Amino acid sequence: MTILECRDVSVQYGSFTACRNVCFSVAEGDYLCIVGANGSGKTTIVKAALGLVGISGGEIVRTNARIGYLPQQNSIQRDFPASVHEVVLSGCVKNRRLFHGRADREDVRRQLARLGISALERRPFRSLSGGQQQRVLLARALCAAGNLLVLDEPVTGLDPVVTDELYAAIRRLNKEDRLAVLMVSHDVRRAVENATHILQMAGRPLFFGSADEYRASQLYKDMSGVEVCGTHLGQCGANCHASHIHIPGDYSHD
Image (cartoon, rainbow, N blue to C red):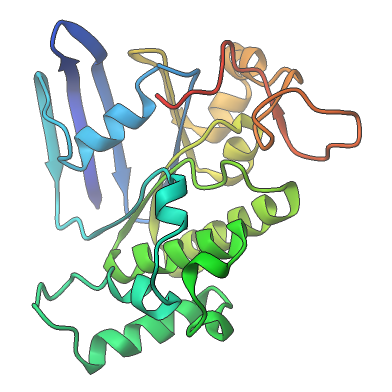
């Protein structure tokens, strides 16, 4: 069953068209990665699909969508003065109650255990490493996610080992729990390795289809040249073991 569908969606900021005529769908068990250069509209179309920005054309259909969202992070969010338990608890919004009850606290512990980070529950969030913080924020998103997890560049700035671990955790959630995933990623190679479907953006859709079809396309060959390190956000040496991608321009967020 289709959970989320964008039908010919366009988004404008004043006179600037951020993306146009975007069509894609996410069904139960799908893992869709959105790839493309900076400024191609990846984050914009995700925010539009979630109802966070308005659309100037088209239609967005959500069918019984229960969504957990992990947006791009900034330094202020990483320094948030709360415990891990409190951060994850803030994601328990399914029942829309003013106060969190026992069921919510049990859900927090369940999601922490699901990601193998139960030992961090009472730790201050700001004291954790970048990889630990991302797992905590993923647990927070899982508290809200009933059938769809939305992630916007969740591995930016993480080292290669932690990046692989986070991708493995997300893949496990998708395969074992049948949780649909919608992810924005700069790492085209990892996207193709993990996702079931790919949407490539360039202000408009250049490709939407299965990961296998995309792997065989010229678009993938053009995007997967070994030039820029998506983990270190710039040039790096021969000892870097991260996946490498060709992305024109700088790494400012779109």
